[in-house]
Image (cartoon, rainbow, N blue to C red; front, side, top):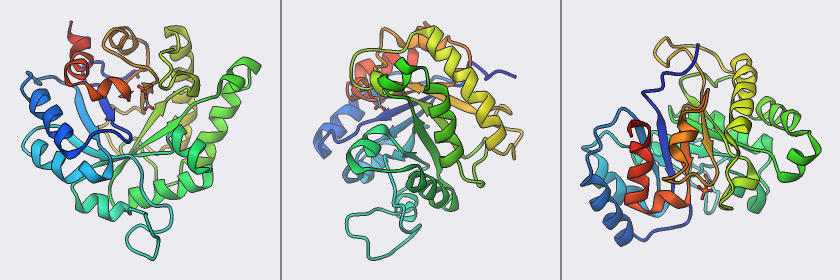
Length: 258
Ligand code: PGA
């Protein structure tokens, strides 16, 4: 079964951008657009903006997400600088991005750490957006599918289900570079990830289109979103840079309707 193409998941990853004021300005403009869309929208601001973003979106259908959570405890502990899954839940988050390639690169996150974060997030009822992607080196030497399968096998815990886990395919060479994967590459990998993840994720619900949600990220913008969303087995987008501009982000969300 393929994913219902009317209900995409569009996730904004603001990374380490926005002040309280610029975040408010963004949302004021963004919420002024007609957001009556069948896409599910998730905004993942930095931790410091979660409360102010929540105040502005609480009466809308937009969901709140975070960009990371602690691998050391699901709730509390002497872990300076960490934010737990319970704290995110407390702030109203429904989603959390886990294992972004920037976390792997700059904070040496391993598959083991990522798996632990997934377990804690699920324990608190958060939906996880598990990021994975191959480097240019993996792509060029042809080992990329093995690499992706290994990441999935090592990161996906037994508590992961079709309902609580979204897979975000983000080729590392496409993130923030202006280079997107071709439609053929995206379809090839999404089909592959669908096959692999179907064996790893439990199907505990009949409501999640009975399918795994696999979204694409990496230099998505208002110009390429439509063709990426029309690719087979693409159930949404993870958007970095272009999600910082309310007009561009709105155009991305509307792109499957145009
Ligand atoms: P980008 O980032 O859209 O700026 O390439 C995507 C991501 O890192 O999630």
